[in-house]
Amino acid sequence: MQPRASWRAPWLATAAALIALAVPARGAAREPYQTLGVDAVERMLGASDVRVYDANTRELFEKNHLPGAVHLGRQKLSVLLPADRTARLVFYCTGPK
Image (cartoon, rainbow, N blue to C red; front, side):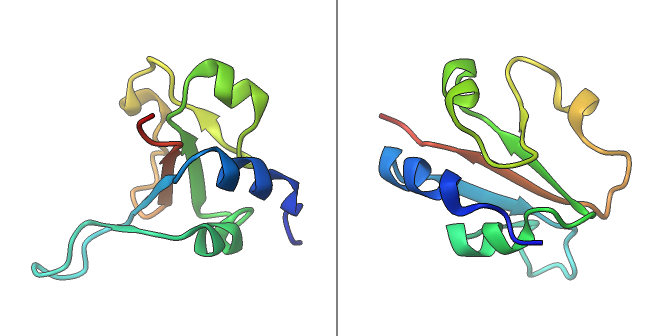
């Protein structure tokens, strides 16, 4: 099932998004995270092992957000993060203005 592309235009036009994927480290030399492009994240949306978190303001989140995204707000990450430590985590925002 492909996500609708309607979310892409507003997010790409708003600002350069910082999209990072937190993955378990597989070796000492590898960083525990990586930066992904919009196309890579789009392919991940809807996968059962992927959780998406929006770090934008509540106003921006309510106006437009990625499908399935959870707004971070002022909540503690320990409450929001899944118990499954192998889950792939995507965090994004519109970046500084």
